[in-house]
Every structure is written in structure tokens, then in C-alpha cells.
Length: 108
Image (cartoon, rainbow, N blue to C red; front, side, top):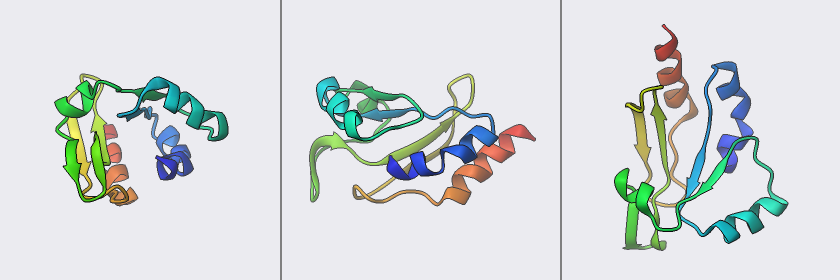
């Protein structure tokens, strides 16, 4: 999530919006955001509904319990998934160029 914040300007240049959805309770997210600023919405999915619908929910694995795998999705304005990346561990993320290639292809 911090890396996406760091490259947020690249998303803005492409006219796209970023939203983070965390499988956490709202009060924990609020506490986290008190000392960590993000230029985009950070939403709570405390009941794990969204993470289950997108197939990233993890009941238990080596580094997490009852949480979501790290994942990045690019959706078009109609909600169709154009790009998805699901990490295997909590610090597994896609290459920036893969995300941006997808975004750039939408504009063409």
C-alpha cells in the first residue's frame, strides 16, 4: 500500500483513481491513518466480503490468519477486471510497468 502511495502521481497522470481496501476494522485503519497519510481512499472490509468476492481471502497461511493476500486490480469504468495480481506472501507485489502497461492500453 505504501508503494502505491509513492507512485500515486503516475496513476494521476493517467487519469485513474486508486482505492485501497483493507481486511481490517475501521478503527484500526483510522488509527493507522493518523500517522500515515494517503492521497487516496483507504476503506475497511472488516467482514472480509470484498476480499472473498475477489478471491484474495486467506483463512490461514505461513504469514497471515483471517486476512487478504496482497493484490492489485485494475478495473475499467464498468467494473470489469482488466489486470489482476495476487501475491503469495504479504510483500509480493506486481511490477509497476505491468500495471502501467494495462492502464496505458485502456487509453488507446
